[in-house]
Image (tube, rainbow, N blue to C red):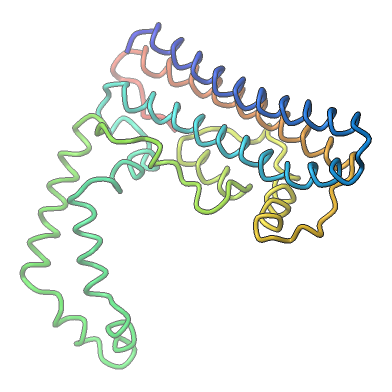
Length: 253
């Protein structure tokens, strides 16, 4: 990968950040308009309904930023074995041969088998057929090939682990998987933002968001977006150093 490619990815990271911050600026502008209108009821209601929008700017930014990082890995043209086990695991889960193997394990170790193991281990032995052994050996061969090949051309957005919400746990799981450092991120209020968004998303409009709380939430998400953007840029710089080193460079940790 050319150094200019890394600059392109940094431009994408900056674009993603600016779009999210711009969205938050729009929310603040509308809130200022509501305040100047003198309609207290509408002002209060806007602050409430703006919380899911504020959260969406955060989730969209997080997903897009992680996708840019993943896309950088995909386009780096390096063999999979040069990356950490965590990075390889993200791509491995998308491989058809791996999915078939997981399905086979699920079929063997189903609910009924799980119950029977306590009483009779022979129950599960009966399900381990010659076909299962053959599939296992095939999977090992596929993994050998996988490790020696470049990362597959998949939709990297599907590799981002968001689950239902982008909370503190989700941030740490994705950062750990890619090797990003989250020690500089203030995740202390993220749970509160997610919780308030979920409450409003389930129709609990009795929640009150006073002006001070509104400004606090906006400022927190803005700072979190800026800080995470810096984490991604530092990670990208580290990856660039790794890739531009001689071949004996170690896998990313």
